[in-house]
Length: 382
Ligand SMILES: *Cc1c(COP(=O)(O)O)cnc(C)c1O
Image 1 (cartoon, rainbow, N blue to C red):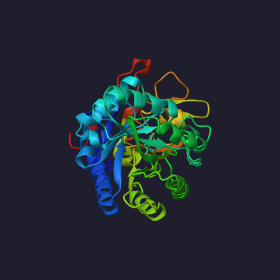
Image 2 (cartoon, helix red, strand yellow; image 1 turned 135 degrees about the horizontal axis):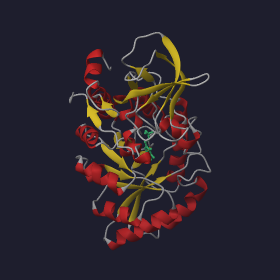
Image 3 (cartoon, rainbow, N blue to C red; image 1 turned 30 degrees about the vertical axis):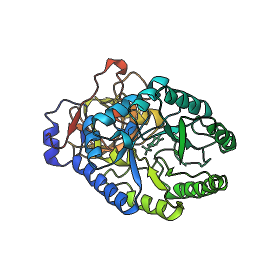
Image 4 (cartoon, protein in one colour; image 1 turned 135 degrees about the vertical axis):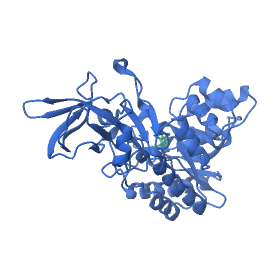
């Protein structure tokens, strides 16, 4: 909660900045830890959602592993205390340099997305005289019912291995001596709020389990990826972690000795962050009131990139309600946080909170227009 007391402190801090409420982050991690212990699942936090070093340190202190998509993320995770043996490396376009560095660091597993990638990992592992553990990222053809830019599990997506390629993949594996297949990996999209989507994934995984079993291939790991959504309308609401774990527990049929891995990103950090901004100007259009704020798409690109909706609050006004378009200062029409939303009467200098900005906010920041990168401020620092 951003209360009056916090607001008074915000007034002295130059805007825009990311405000991270550590109580919220830790409450979420407490649930994850409890559920992990009960279920025996292993959680790898998807570092791409937020790679802020302090946030990474807190997450690693709760015993989570890390899911990374570049060597730089792996290095940041190791620096933050994640053991290399609990780091997985995903991504459709891993570079040779990144693969070699990850092999050298002895990470746990590569989530592999194509035959050419398997060949390259095998070759680079042979140079280091190592055996790389891999999981196959399989495309399960499940519609995630989310925005098309964050849907990844359907057929014509650049991600994953198609099931019709699996025979060839398995054949290929027998000739690659420096990689070892240890699991299946999936990731069907992000910001998934319908639990039925995950249920479909579970059924699909159970079918694929039979495919592997019938070929006498033992897999230690089933990795269902990330994607658990958060409620952007209700920033105070915790993600449905308990429900998610219990669904996986109920519907995936693990074979003896198999371990289930999950890779939530947004669900861990999304609700702990807000982008705090000041109103620069109120501008009257012919039909529209524009509230021009000092945060822009360079600080939080989700609305411009995915037509995403974030709850916006004017923390410093309790005037009567008007409708505003809340826009940033960047020279792009898409630099719009929300259109025609209700806010209490808004004036220059008012403090605006764009909520649920803890995932894919700071991590996706850019310096377009040569803007400064907004700093992170933690709740225990003010
Ligand atoms: C992006 C991604 C995640 C995290 O997704 P969230 O929606 O933030 O939970 C996990 N695994 C893979 C492979 C990803 O690409």
